[in-house]
Length: 399
Image (cartoon, rainbow, N blue to C red; front, side, top):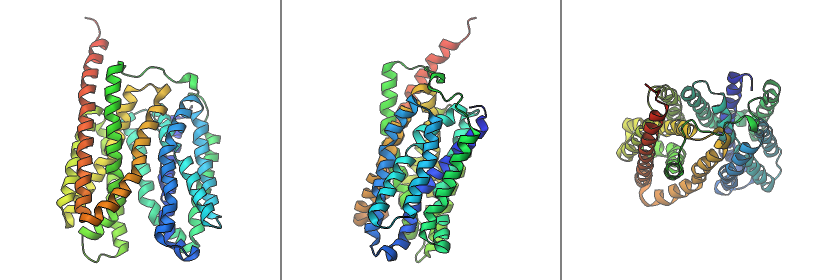
């Protein structure tokens, strides 16, 4: 593609939309209870297939991204999401709605394994550009509930689906008109990583990342899903629902903006070392949230969210350094599959643990996962240090 900054703009918009569209239904479901005469529990269960598809289909999309046009796949993302949202807006019954949400999860799964590889291929300052892309995704998470609620209140729940459908389609058209296939052809992709790994080192790093992705996904999903209820129970008694939403949004926005700082740090600190440091900060912050109340709780949650978002950015950069462009899609698809598939596990854990010990127990178990994540990232850092030392000796110019 000839215009890297333009391409990055579309990829950032896609990241925003990817997270935004997935959170439309959890908000409009409240208005559907009366119209469809169904209970909240029955309706929210319709989103299960959507989120399962979001994790599961990252695997085939990542493989296809390494063997076909990533630009065309991103166009399918925009138009597929638009069609799924439009189908949900026009739904006449729960079966059609469930199928529409499932299709939305399938098309939304394209972004992470494919979009991240396009981002890395066009990035000039990798740390800054990956961090900024993360901010756009986090803004999608933070703004979806508020914007969806406003549209549904003013124009009805069907427009809450229809409006983003129009936006997705319009951006898809602009993407095809303003970008080109150049540099995104399979033959143009490098077959060599920036830093080569032998099979033993590659296996160790892959194993550490697999554990880190699963544990990190559990921490991410548990904290982000539970934040409103944590604030409700442990910040202040009888706080209005609107204020709970504002506080939760503020915490999420703080974490998203913090990624800009992480991007700057990546230009000064080796990514594998920063990865381990952020993981330790995440474990400490989640442990602090376990015992904190009032303003201290908000501070702990804000630091935890900043670390959770930051480790995603740094982890992507670490993978990019040791993975050739030709097969990054497959590697990222496995990473995101493990991270996203944990969302169902996280929700089940919250439901099971909260009834037995409240959010004190939920956060205590989450702290254990955060510790596992930290240990895994330390393993990545130790192996990467050895690899970087060998790499430095190999590229050292002769005297």
